[in-house]
Structure formats: structure tokens, C-alpha cells
Image: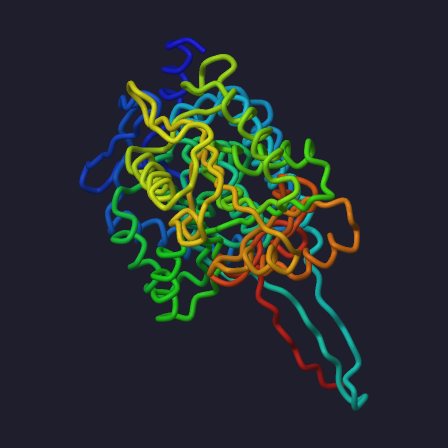
Length: 487
């Protein structure tokens, strides 16, 4: 992609706040910069919302809620269907926009646009399947009528690592259920969400249903909305530390919450596994999105009999990955999101090395501009290394050895997190035993990718609350109402 094309896709995005169906500047006129993580250069400036802007967005959502809740479900679904088609039609330009602000290679960005669109298609079909119930009371005198209604105005906070898909995964069910929204995208990657807002408006979404506030002061702008009393739902994807703070704030007004938080995914390889398949799955689970994913394999546990061969094959694959700006042909590993991310990854690797881990490949930053870190494989990683307990969010694969199934499961569960785990084995009994014993909300069994719009995504323990996607995803935006009927 040449500079003219890059410039044109950035220029095509309206960089103001989207409130009540209108583009508007920040009340103070303030803006903040969006950077290209591959070069450090400023891509553009976007409106920096104030508390006043946030309240105006909630005003719009609250005033539109009753009308939107009464909107025919079929029409809500058709809006999502049109937006799905628009995303696919504009896949290349949206992918380039995403690569510029987030850094991932174009091929991955194209994949994310397609993945993001699928949430709109899925929930377009779910909009007309919101059901209820009718039953005779046990005493035979009355009737039990059960219906489902929209939760109400919802606050959606999305992360920078999947700037479009994490938006559609929340917006899709909210639209299908009949909820209005205030969306705050991550400061690092606001452009994909702003482009998505225009696509939904063009698809016929009524004014005030979706409101987008971009801001460099997430806490200052969102906390007053959480405590306002008119918002009835918060859906957040991000770190566990921030999630805890938001839960405390939500307790004030008893908001319904969905929390997709941090992960520390174990990747278990047993000695009866197909090693080539296991290495391929490891590459997917580790290197998708440059390792900047909550589902990324964070701890590799390999049975002793195959540990050396697995490490050798994984090292060969990791050391051969091309690094560079995501717009360049053939690049597989783009930059991390910012300098702080690079520093964190480097600190974790150095700590493991000091504690006795062996670095088989990588282990250092990349000279020159941009936030690059070499794909890294370590072996003999001790259990007290920071890598074993902290989410890496980078292209680093730490390998430890185990002997027994019980030892592997105990190590996998030895974490406060419980989002996803990966298991490679050809023994069906072992596969089921280990999958059931893992304290995670999801398991990748002989596969390295679990994300699927048709499946419930979410974790246990401190990896979150609730589920997104699947047939249960829309329930997070619905309240169940019971009506006692006397005959």
C-alpha cells in the first residue's frame, strides 16, 4: 500500500464524536494524537471528549431507548445485515486503517474485518429469536408468562488489540436486543470504531442508538456515566486490574456487567500428540495478533518425552518469522502497540533468563523506529518467573516440562486467570478428562484458535463475567420478566 492510499483511508474517517446521530467536536475543542506503532509517527488527531460530551452521549442513548426497544426485531436484524455486507465490501480499506493504527499485518487485519462482520451476521439472525414462555401454574389456577426485554442504555468499552471485532461483538447483540449504547474505544485505536459508526449510520441505525466518544481520559469520562443511574449495563474488554475498578463503580447503581478480562492461557502438549499439529497450533495460539491477545498461549507445558523436539520445531518456526511494518508484503510480525508494551515484554524475558531460563531464539528488541520485539522461545522456565504469572501480550513462548497428567493440570490451573486453555493429545479419554479439569471458560482441543461468533466466549475466575457470542451472547443485553396471570 502506498502513502497516498494510507493517507486517503485515514482522511476518510470523521475524527469527531458521534452523538445523537451527529458528528461533533469535543466541547473544549481538545484533540489527541493517534500514532502508527510501526513508525511512531502521528497518523491524525481525533476529538478528545470531556465529561460533558460523555453525558451528552448518555442523554442521547437514554432519550432514544424506549423508541428503539419498540423497533421491530426484524428491522433491527436487517440493519445489522446491511452493516455486515458493508464491512465485507470495504474489507481492504478497513484492514489498512486497522493496520495503521494498531500495527498488525494486513493479512491479519483483513481476517479481523471478516471476523468482526460475522458478529453482525450472527446477531442479525438472533434478533428475531428472542423468546419467552407460557405455562400453566402448578396449582392450575393461573398462568406463568415469561418475556425478555432490553436491559436498557449500555456502556461499551473496547480494547485496542482487536479494535473492530471487539466492537461488533458488543454492538451486535446490543442492537439485536434493542439496547442503545455509548461506546468508548481505546485511545490507541479509535479510528476503526469511528469508521464502524459511520457504517452503521449508513446501514440505517436510528440516531441516538449508537454514540461514540473518543477520549484520552477514559476514567474521567466513563465513571460519571457508570454512576449516573440511567445506564443499565456495562460491557468491558480489557485488563483484570481495570475490570476490578469498574466492577466497584458498577456496584453503586447495581449495573448489569459483562467482563472479558485478562488471560494466562496454558498450552498443554502430551507425548501422544501429533507434534507437527501441536507446533502449528502453538504458532496460531501464540502469534495471532503478534501475541497481543487475551487468548494467546502464555505458558507452554510439554511432556518430557517430546519437549526437546517440540522446542526445536517451535524455535525453527518462530525464528523464521518476517518482522516489519504491517503494510509490507510478507510481514508476519508487526510492532507492539507502544513503547510500554515493548518494555514490559523485555522485562519479563530478562527476568526469566536471570532465573535460569534458556533463550533459544529472540529475546531482544529490534533496532530502529517502531515498537518491535523479536519472536522469542525460552525453555526451562522456572515456576517463579514472572512469565509464569503475568500476561505477556507479546511474541514470547516460554516452555516448561512436565511428567504426568496431574502435574500438567495442576500447573495449568495455578493462576488467578481462567479464560482459555489449549490441549494437544491423541487420546480421546485424556482429551475429555483434561478439558473438564481445566479451570477455564474455553478449551482449544487440538486446535490453536477458539474464537467463533457462534460460540460463547468468556472466562472464569479473574478472567471475567458473562459470555459474548453464541446463542447466549444476546442474553447479556436482555432482562427476563415474569408476569403472573390470573384466570
